[in-house]
Image (cartoon, rainbow, N blue to C red; front, side, top):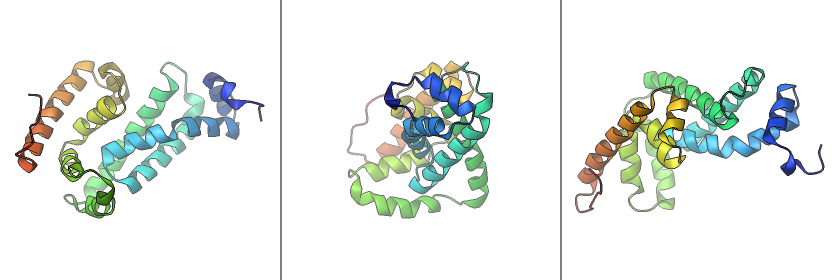
Length: 187
């Protein structure tokens, strides 16, 4: 253990973790877990699923760490792994879930902690197709630019722009249905 781990460059933690040092991987985990968990939650909209997805992403990262070449930032590499985990989850849950039943309990439990319009926004986000919801999560919640989001989602930058445009229109339409008196800005 080092005297001051905060001063150790990330590249050193990565190298040491690639060589099997669990403490270094632990530092990487601590640095990025909340970020990956937040991304997973914003896509799946379920706290318990986000817990599972974030853990699975780090398990895959640990298994694949020896193959990390550094051509992308470590952060973006983790986002890409998380994206792949989420895609796999979506495939599995598509077969298992019907409608929005899976989210009802979580909404009820968390609704008391949220602003009054949270339920409407949450429901509107649920109704977005997964590819649009991922773009929204990366661009608006994770504050990435379109290029960064495109790299993570393995698509062209204009595709992200289109997804964001389409998501805004669909969200506006959905929110106007649930909040007709509210003024929704944008096109």
